[in-house]
Amino acid sequence: MSKLIISCGTPLKGEVRISGAKNSVLPIMAASLLADGKSVIEEIPYLNDVRVMGELINSLGAGVEFSNSKTTVLINPSDITNTTAPYDLVNKMRASFLIMGPLLAKYGAARIPLPGGCAIGSRPVDLHIKGFSAMGAEITQGHGFIEVRVNGRLKGSKIYLDFPSVGATENIMMAAAISDGQTIIENAAIEPEIVDLATYLGTMGADIKGAGTDTIRINGVDRLKGANHTVIPDRIEAGTYMVAAAITGGDVRVDNVVPDHLKPVTAKLREAGVEVSEELTSVHIRAGDDIRAVDIKTHPYPGFPTDMQAQMTSLMSKAEGTSMVIETIFENRFMHVNELKRMGANIKIEGRSAIIEGNPNLLGAQVKATDLRAGAALVLAGLAAEGITEITDIEHIERGYVDIEKKLKSLGANIKKVD
Ligand SMILES: CC(=O)N[C@H]1[C@@H](OP(=O)(O)OP(=O)(O)OC[C@H]2O[C@@H](n3ccc(=O)[nH]c3=O)[C@H](O)[C@@H]2O)O[C@H](CO)[C@@H](O)[C@@H]1O
Ligand SMILES: C=C(OP(=O)(O)O)C(=O)O
Image (cartoon, rainbow, N blue to C red; front, side, top):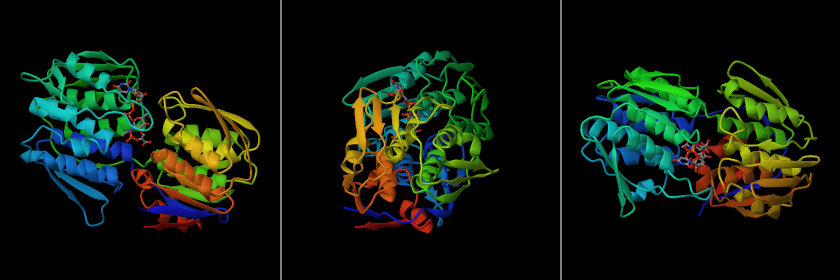
């Protein structure tokens, strides 16, 4: 089993290039199933999740080819024969459920295992299903599968989401792209990844207006063509390197970012006393030794992202003073806290809040990555802790960070992966 071993080093210095966004490429790969021809997706992050999505799409009969450099994927959905997704792939990655909308719209049916919960929460898919049902799909559930079917084509409908779910907005938007009439999604998610997906669908010939606002209008079309698309940079990977610079008192330029997408992270780092300067496609982080405690509450975009909560919890564990971190999106997203405590962090959990008394002297320890961002938080704490930190279960971390060991090493971190 692989581990990451980190010893406290000098402040991080230099430049790091951010990869394409995991949370954009996954729905975009799913959306490529809607096309009549090939799509080429560029700037992909070659992560485990991307490979699993490739295998899943391939299992339906579509062609999936990664370029030699692994930065581009070509998807040819012309030979799809199967609309049932295998359990062993869906089980590995919740985003697999995003193939339901495209399969339903294009082939009139999809049978997908219930994705189930994961370490961070129960993560139901009721909003996706309500959306498909409003568009005329028949839903059946049993033997661990959800099956959706429609006679003819989906019908446009007005759909109000009880919560601005990212996945439900994406799945419904993809399904509505090939349908009869107009679909209006109200209280839609407005994350940058929604806009990226809508841009790709637009290039394929879809008629979508309002992506990036809470009301999205989709006029269904008869067919979509394959298209080329370049994925936006990963704002969560970028935020993680920003915190890495801050927690080590470093000086790092984070390149290939959209600074606007990083606003909530930038604002909190500045409040904590970190200097952040924004350039056109990069942010430059300069931090001293003193980090001030700040309170954080997660919200849908443009609020503070839940996917950055664990990393900020690490930073606050070392800050001067007391901070409160409130998680409002997922009910069980404090799995990193017990591990951080092993490193000397003073954190008390009360319901959905973590109360953190900063301790400037974190100590390296043996810890376990319980989920993707919890793992990232431990890497960050390890970079700033005295002594050696050994992180196991790093497959979680590798779901979301391309070459994390190489990138951190290039900034001067003492980190190595051992098998
Ligand atoms: C692949 C991907 O893009 N993953 C991101 C996506 O996940 P995902 O799309 O799963 O997240 P959602 O926005 O759907 O979930 C947010 C909340 O809504 C609830 N909910 C969601 C759907 C539903 O049908 N019913 C329901 O109750 C969830 O349990 C959760 O509490 O957005 C999350 C919130 O920004 C991020 O943390 C994930 O990194
Ligand atoms: C929760 C995350 O991803 P997923 O929805 O793929 O589990 C994440 O990226 O932090």
